Image (tube, rainbow, N blue to C red):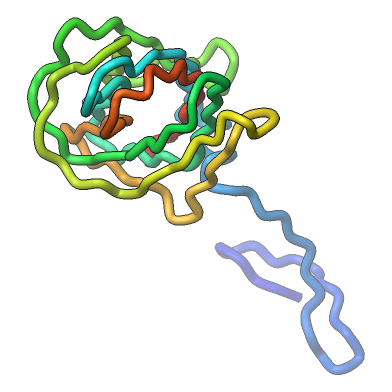
Length: 178
């Protein structure tokens, strides 16, 4: 007999008195998706300028925003893409991008998200990681962040290139709130 939260349950034990337990595990992103708090942001941009921040995401929710996966694809040129967090300023001439809730028909994300074919003029921030896109790679390149990139409330990030690659970059960024 096992007692949990005031309830008594019958449980099996092994011959050496170990409790037999059946369990299932879910990733935090899957749990968030079930709560209508996980999102995908598909985008396609041409960074098109020297030192260009071409994708912008700002957390305007009171909770932390956790980025756990990024898929990128290019066929034009090899390019290095930096993920920079803590950038400041207001995006210049960006086009709004609406994140899609992974719970079909779920609520909208409390974020500001924009893309631009060219630089959005944001400043500061720190490079979290550098991603190399190989134009000869067949298919999308996918990065899973086991320790997700966390954007606290009122914090922004960009995808950024250091040189003018004139690379058409297609991607999908995945995030959830916690």
